[in-house]
Image (tube, rainbow, N blue to C red; front, side, top):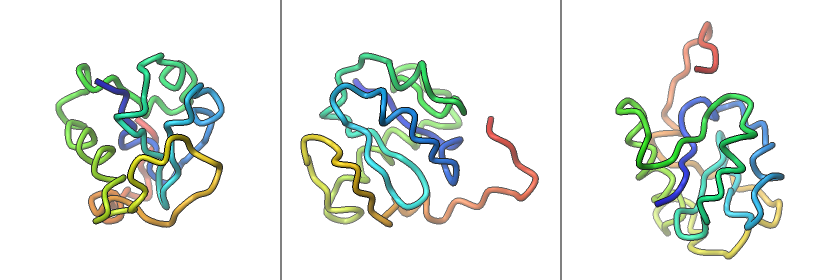
Length: 113
């Protein structure tokens, strides 16, 4: 069980969640942040501070955002970012994104939801 970053983070990347995370399990991709599911300790600090409500607990995630459970997990695989389990974000970013995030097309008139 872990928290998951979802759609509202795409192209926003506020970053408040990274400052709040006590174990640095939130990593920066090209268009959004991703939570490493094996490093997350389920404290919920990121959830409480996210200004765009992009973070959800994986067992309570809405049906329309279910894909983000796999997206967050798969981001760390060799096929996507190759980060593996680094054991804590060191403030460096990658331009890599999960293919579904990279292909995500946010309408120009869309707002964070």
